[in-house]
Amino acid sequence: MRKLVFWIVGLGLSALFLWLALRRADFLVVRENFKSIRFSFIFLALLFMMAGMFLRGVRWKFILKPAKDVSSWTCFSVLMIGFMANNFLPLRGGEFVRMWLLSRKARISKSLSLGTIVAERFFDILVLVLILLAGIVGSGVFPPLARNVAYMGGGIFIILTVLFLFSSRQKERVIGYSERCLFFLSGRWRKRLVGALSGFLAGLAVLRTLPQILVITLLSFLAWAGGLLCFYFGLRAINISVTPWGLFFVKAITNLGTMLPAAPAYIGHYEFLVKTSLVALGADANAALAFALVYHTMWILALTAAGLYFFWRENLTWARLKENVGRLPSDV
Image (cartoon, one colour):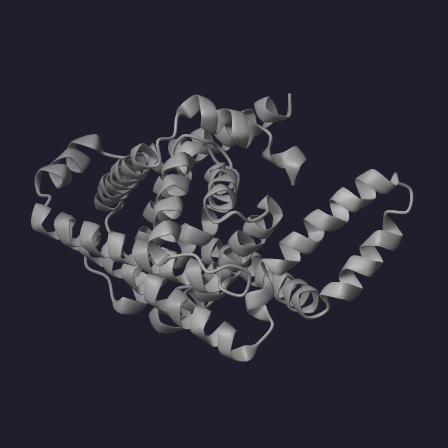
C-alpha cells in the first residue's frame, strides 16, 4: 500500500508539472529547434557530465574514508548504478540501491552506507544554495519560483547543518539519548535501532573535522562545475545564450526543485523547472522547452547506459535487486 501511495503521488506531481511545461507550447517551433541541434556540443556536454560523475565518486570515497577505504572506481560504479535506478524508481529509489550495493561491495552496514549518502546530499545542498545565491545576485533575477526554491533549499540546509554537525561530534550523547527515548521497546528492538543509528552516525564522521569538510566541499564544487559545463554546452547545442550567473541560476533551481516527490527520472519536474527558469532570464519559451526535452533525454539515456554497463559488470539481476532493495527500509 505504501509503495502504491508513493507511485501515485510521484506520478501525479510529474503529470501536473509536465502539463504546465507543455501547455501553450508551439510544437512546430519546438520541432524547428530540434532540427538545429549541434551535436558537437552534445558530445562535449556528455564528456563533462561523466567527468562530474566521476568526481562525485571520488568525493564519496573521501566521505567513506573515516570508516572504510573504498576505491574511487568502486564508488563511481555504485553511483552510476544508483543514478540508473533513479530513472526507473520513484522518489529517488536509486539511493536505496546505492545503499544496498555499497554495503555489499565494501562490507559495511547498510546504516553506515546510508549515512555517507546523506552526508553527500548535505554537501550537494550546500553547493546548490551557494550557486543559487550567486545566480540571483549576479543575474538580478528573483521571481517567485526562485524565492520559494531558495527558501526551501536554505531552510533544509540550515536544519541539516545544525543536526548533522551536532550528531557527528556528539555521537555518544546522541546514542545515549536515543536509548533513553526508546525505553518502551523490547531490548532486542532497542539494540537493533541503536545499532543502526550508530552506523548511520559513523557515515557522518567526515563532518567532525574542518580539514575533512574543506576537502569534501572542494570536491563538491569541482563535481558541480562538471555539471554546470555539461549544462552550458547543452544550451549551446540549442543555441541558447545565458550569462554565467544565469547558468548558476537555472542549474540550482532545477536541481533543488527535483527534491520534490517525482516519477522516475524526474519527468515533468525537470522540464517545468528548466523552462520556467530560462524564461525568467529572457529565453524564448519554445526554445527553452526544446532544450529541456533534449537535455533531459540525453541525461536519462547517458546515465541509464552507463548504469546498465556497471550493472552487467557486477553480475546483478533485476530480481535480485528488487528482492534486496525491497527489504531495505525494514533492515535500516
